Length: 74
Image (cartoon, rainbow, N blue to C red; front, side, top):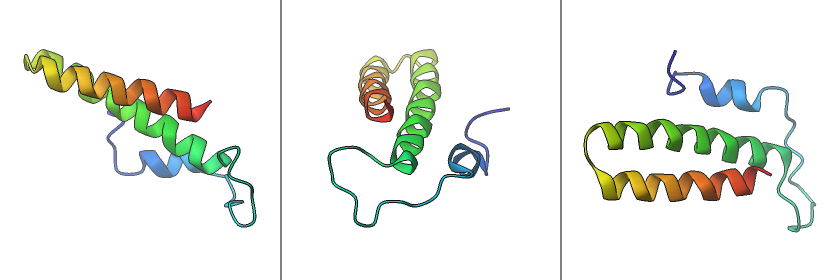
């Protein structure tokens, strides 16, 4: 099944409480990290689609977005 499924983001963040109120900006919340990981997964799938369609520049930018999202998910 594609990660682009209807409830993929809900599954990625399931059980993660919203603890962003009153937190320092030094470390992303668990919800933000889960969202970043989800975005990275989407970018990976879109990168493959772009490569298959010979959209090299689009694939490059999506790969860069994937790397940035993976970094944010750490």
